[in-house]
Length: 497
Image (cartoon, rainbow, N blue to C red):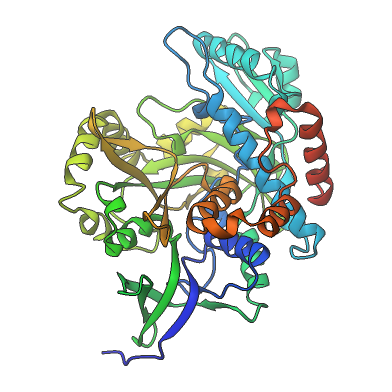
């Protein structure tokens, strides 16, 4: 039995030391530097789960290449409104990072962001037609100006030589390319942000602290109970605002809060693996993030892609991800996470979502049973010359897809990112996955507006927000001059060549 440790009081508690809490903490410190914050993390290091570089794709999700953001419609047209929205949001994130670099808060931008072309590549006449239609719709928009499309094999050999070696000449193939794409190391970015926050007298980082309970006090504040993972000591922290940014575990903690807004939400865990190239000669032949089309029934996080990465200063090459199933909600979680999340309020939506997604269940079972040679077969669709000896399996992060009530279907499976907050805005949780980290800045700014409405209305707050995000409140896609200016400034500050 652990002893009771000293209790404390703060203005804000951030649960989870990943990119979301790091972003929110930094925004609060810039916009309201008088607020006291405590960041609580159950592991002994920062950014060890989904934010770690090896646990995510590292793609700066801006819809330049991700085909799941541009679904094909029954009439053959392609819907691009979600792609425009995501591209707008990523530009906001880049502006904030650029501001932090200009102020000297982030010292070396090349350690967390690099320019890497974003490409979509498809095979077969049907998908070539889809990509051509997508390109024709997107290249008219300001955010996607500069996108290039080709079906010319000689051009493709210049763009992606590794993918074109020994490829059948008669095979229909097409690709789009945007050179302004990025690779982002969210692990490094998170550690840099948290490292900066730790220099502030009013901000505390508490590692090895597992949140065991969250209860509402009579005075409206929240009491967060933690347990030290090393000593077993327990502590209670009182806070006026609590943010739950604990990745897959956010759902379990949100349920502990007891707020009515959490009722009906469930979670479906999806694991993942990469094939990581170990041959330096092969790694150096590829310089792009190339996304394909997902298999029927596959979740969006399983869209296959062959990615150039920059991790710890070295170029890497990954292919995947290969989806899998585990009842864990975190990579370092418990196999009891899924059963523990099932409540009377969400069992119906979870069952309904399961019945309406049998193709996903079948897909995951198939993925789990794949051998290394089966995984290689998938890679060979992208890289015909691939050999197993040049690749090794790397376990990726664990994601929990959102299940929510639906009046028509009873329950639906959501593949995006969703913020759930109490009616009074005193507690909020981030659920879901992609595009998540890439859009962390606009998500957290909108959360602050919802949860700190009086501060967000002040002239001082709005003036500072415009300093952080010059385009805030404006639509870049409708203003080509502003779009170009914003991108130029961000590129210069972040050293994106």
